[in-house]
Length: 115
Image (cartoon, rainbow, N blue to C red; front, top):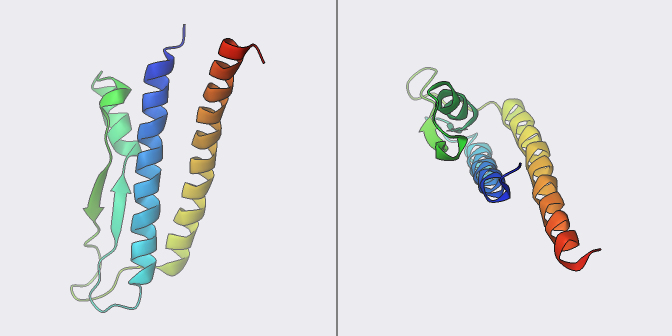
């Protein structure tokens, strides 16, 4: 049997991580011409995999925002095409998760109202 409350909470957590990733990507794009700026990234998938390997519940995995200090000191490390690709991927994943939650709401509506 599917635990809908747990599934909905997990979907919401994924949506929160994707929203944070979109915001960080837009922040990186906005600062692509700032001297010495180092990009930020949102780690979620690898933390989710680590939680699963350790036997923790998937509901314990949270995202984290980290600064990418790669590259020469004082040099900007934002690559516009990489950021745009990441933004597109994030938008697609966000759409998938939104549809997943919408399907859940449709299921509940059908269970309550029979339509």
